[in-house]
Every structure is written in structure tokens, then in C-alpha cells.
Figure 1: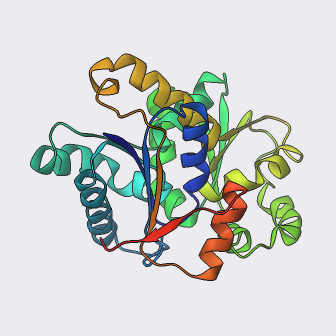
Figure 2 (figure 1 turned 180 degrees about the vertical axis):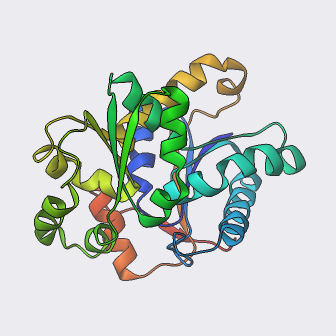
Figure 3 (figure 1 turned 30 degrees about the horizontal axis):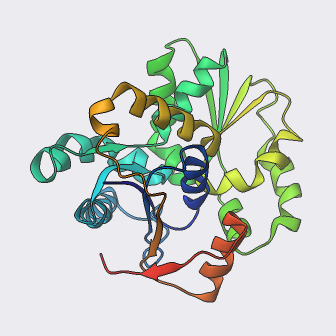
Length: 261
């Protein structure tokens, strides 16, 4: 059985690649719902529906567990998927998200004041605030949306991103740690670190470690995972722009397969 990684688009490839680099022995199936990206402007009901359809595809294609790499889907649908979707459809499978392990990593760094730079939908969900304060009730959280970063990153506009970061990072001067609360931001983490004096928490660095620990604690699941080092990359729509963006993330051409979900 495979490890599935799901994102509303292609940003989650950064996490999928990082997981596979750390644990190359397993088989992986990536799904990017590029036909319906972005999820951030959708209603909660629609996000639940889209996430369930993606999970159907991944579990029907022999995934033992799925990592929801999309911050929006993790914020809006993870708990509902775990508590309602799985018991009804795939009670023996598991779904993990990116928000909980990333919040845990920020608290484990010893931070007392944590900044969250994310998309507007993730900020408005309050998911990072809830998880950070669950881990450490006394932690102070400052959130800020950065709506222009995703389109700049997707459209190969990194040469324009530095003045945007200078603006978006204002207000985080007193925070100990800064969470990059969007998978796309993994691609600019070095630029953020050059500007932020504290600890920068990037999900592509956190999630592989947390997933490896999870599998170590659940050997009954780990032993069911196939170990042929196979990689499959699926998208729901494919354009030259998507192919180019995937290439920039992976530093190589990826065989993107168009599927229906």
C-alpha cells in the first residue's frame, strides 16, 4: 500500500518530495487538484466535498494513509474527514494534516510568541491559533495573510517577491518563531530566513520528520506499506504552466498524469 499526499494544487509537491527524500523506500501517490485550485475562496461545504473526492481517489488507489498537504483543506476539513469520512468509508485507513505537526514544531522550538504567515483562508480559519494554544495555552500568536505570495510564486515571479516579504514581515519583529502556513512558501523559506531573526518553521522540513515518527509509533501500519520506491504524480488538469511549476519545485521534469476524481 502507498502513502498518499494531497494538495489543492502543486505546492504540496514540496512536501511530497521532502517526505520521499527522507523515506525513499516507500511507494507514493501525489494528487494535485489543479482543475479546482485554489480552495481558499470556496465555502467550507465545498472544501469538504472536494477533499472527500480527493480522498476517495487516493484510497481507491491503494493508499494506506494520506497526508493532506494543503493548509486550507487541513484547516477546514481534516477533523471532519477523520471523524466522519473515515469511519463511514475507510475505517482502517488514516488521514494526517500539516497544521498540527507544524504548530507542534513551533512550540517545541521553545517559542513564547509565534507568528503565522499564511493565506487569507488559513488565517481566517484560526486553525493555527487553536493548535498552537492547544500545545501551549500561554503562547501568543500573531497572524498575517499574504495573498500576493502564491500567485507570484506560481508564476515564476520570485525576482519580485523580496519587497513583498519586507512588507508582509512587518509586525513579526517580536516573535520568536514564524510559521510559513502555506505549502508554496517552502519555496521562499531561505528569503524569509534572511529577513527574520527568529526560527522559521517550514512544513517541508517538519512533516517528513513527524510522519517518520508516526510510522515508527504505528508498526502495524508501517509493515503494510509497499517498499518499491515508486512515485506517481496525478493532477486533475495539466497546462504548460503547471508542468513548469512542478519542474521548479522538484528540480526535474515530473511525469504528471491527468486523472478524474
